[in-house]
Image (cartoon, helix red, strand yellow):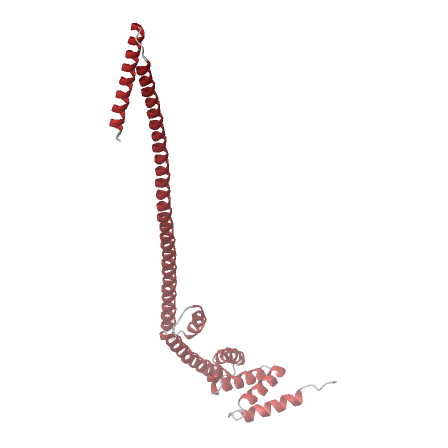
Length: 268
């Protein structure tokens, strides 16, 4: 039954109750017995009360149904929101991870690019020094290559270029040392020999041959001429151990024997 029909039924029921009340009052005024009408009025009032209780009960049920529906609807919205919020949080976390990974890749790329630029600059600087025959500066710049990232081929190429420069520089120093010894400029010969031996020592086995042997002889001979006999004896011994077949080996043995005879013996 619709609300409009219920309202109409209630209005008719109230009208009927009022009408029966008026009839009962009229019978009472005229002295007519009103037993049947009174019972009918009582029945109608009871029916009205029953109807009102049914209406209240129906309203209560409707309210309860509305509350249950509201609760279920709220629960549905909550679970829907929770599900969507969880998915949104997961998507946000994935986006943050992707952003962090992209930033890390960008930083690595920037570092690699900077390292490559530094390597290119260092290589270009070293090659320019070699081109200008500024060998000592090139040898000093070689030490800085250990701090930059070079490819194997590039590093080997530069190492070969520096090795050639070191050999050429050692040869030049050897010529100067020998010329100074021939001019009897023993201090200059000594200094040049020390400088040249430092250069050849850094060159490894590649420079341990004739240039190094010649410089050892010049060092020993200059020390001998400067009167530094103990140092000269050690230098001659080192020269003969490194180059026993050198053209100056005979001369070195004679001077070493002479210095040994002049050396004070233990206990003297």
